[in-house]
Length: 254
Ligand SMILES: Nc1ncnc2c1ncn2[C@@H]1O[C@H](COP(=O)(O)OP(=O)(O)OP(=O)(O)O)[C@@H](O)[C@H]1O
Ligand SMILES: CC(C)(CO)[C@@H](O)C(=O)NCCC(=O)O
Ligand SMILES: [K+]
Image 1 (cartoon, helix red, strand yellow):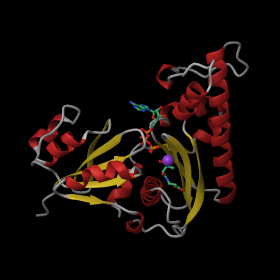
Image 2 (image 1 turned 45 degrees about the horizontal axis):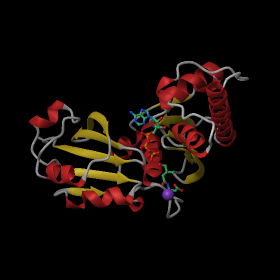
Image 3 (image 1 turned 60 degrees about the horizontal axis):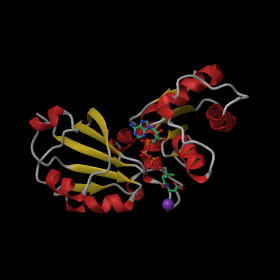
């Protein structure tokens, strides 16, 4: 009988950590944490667990094997002390036509999405940065685009101007008026309608190239953006798949 062993996957993003507990090839559960201090990483390596970790981890063997995909080298370095760690690099991803500085998160999410949903595929990552990354039916990277994510756009306006407040996306409910008569709604209108129009434009440009391609969206702002897109452009969201775990899918297949 094949014994299904538990292991941890860790995606290190630019804002926070994304964890996945696997049992064999099955993704059992996921959770997010802030970056962890070096002292806490040492304790994890010795089999200690954290309050933010799911309770079931306490019942598992100490210091589970750990697989890391990171776009933050300084954070990756902190985990080198962990006893059983493997860091996934671009060379491990079978995607063709990549360029050397392509983010491992983009490569893995694209690979995971393509394997599970089929190539050609376009992945939208609504994270700290918002990215588009596409592959053709031969599993070649076609290319993509990188822009400031939703949170970063509001943060930058708040930080780099004198009179603009910093808005928090958690407080957003419905779409703002397009032509706003107060400052917070004017900022929301500008950022949100421009971002949604941009996402729609990238999706339709992709479908011009690959008419039957699936498109998937991941990342911390995926639900907010999907809901707004559904209100504004229902015809395109009908073909948009919301899937938070694309990178974990990718990690299984490399
Ligand atoms: N609890 C939360 N903590 C931090 N960001 C959150 C949270 N919930 C939603 N978000 C949104 O998620 C976005 C960050 O996305 P995500 O967590 O996927 O990024 P990341 O993985 O850290 O960064 P990267 O872009 O490098 O993948 C922010 O713009 C923020 O608005
Ligand atoms: C674009 C981000 C920040 C998205 O997380 C990451 O994938 C990254 O640092 N990429 C390197 C540059 C590139 O992908 O072309
Ligand atoms: K940088």
